[in-house]
Amino acid sequence: MFREMGMIASRRERLASPGSTYGLQGWIIVLKKSGKISGGCAERPALVLVHGTGQGGRMWRRQLDALSDDFHLVAPDLPGFGGAPGPFSLPAAVECVAEIARRPGPVHLCGHSLGAIVAARTAAEHPDLIARLVLSGGPEIAPGRTSPRRLRLERRRPGRLVRAVSDLPDRAGWIDVLDALEASDLSQVLPRIAAPTLVLCGKRDRGSLPDARRAAAAIPGAHLSVVPHVGHLMPMTAPRAFNAIVCAFLADGHQ
Image 1 (cartoon, rainbow, N blue to C red):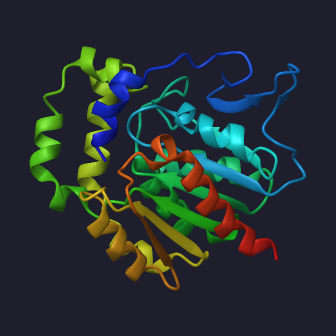
Image 2: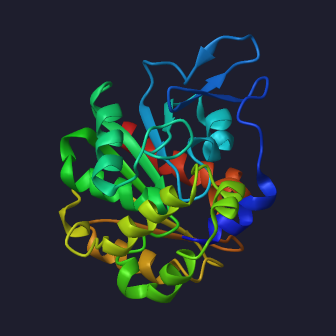
């Protein structure tokens, strides 16, 4: 989960660039080259994309560009990230996603890393809102038990480094995220997920793969896909493979 922070340090990009993505009230939307603002046709199946601990919703720009012909896409900034007001907490993040899902009705939901934790909780707490669920790069089931040393080390990260490698505004925002992760435990959440679920993990993501296997075993009927030659940041570093796998899984729900 924390691998995102270091890798994104060299990948910081402008959110607003012509023909790519813009932020609007905490949402990421596709700006077509014609200047027409759209997240994909509103009549198409809705897909909500939930980011990890590094970049906010803008981490999904490769999906927003590639999938807008098939889905109505929404990639929010979770509370405290980017332009969204904080502080971050898991209940606030779940409510953020649920509020978006209520508008078009049942949606497909995809979360990566931290976003996979949020997505799993949303699916368990709001089963009527989720059509299909994709959990990428985890989710880490109980970070407080499995990564206590890493959580302690991350608490020492100075504010200037937080701002350099994430879309959080300051060190206080990072501590809010760490507090939420330390208290998080999905062991009783995963068995309550009713939506058809794909758990997706790179084979080189050795830190996340054990939890991905456990999550797939705990969620009724879940399918595990382990992608060779890919690490933790699959949506960003292997977008073609990620997009193809996700699209194939979601298409099964519309046949």
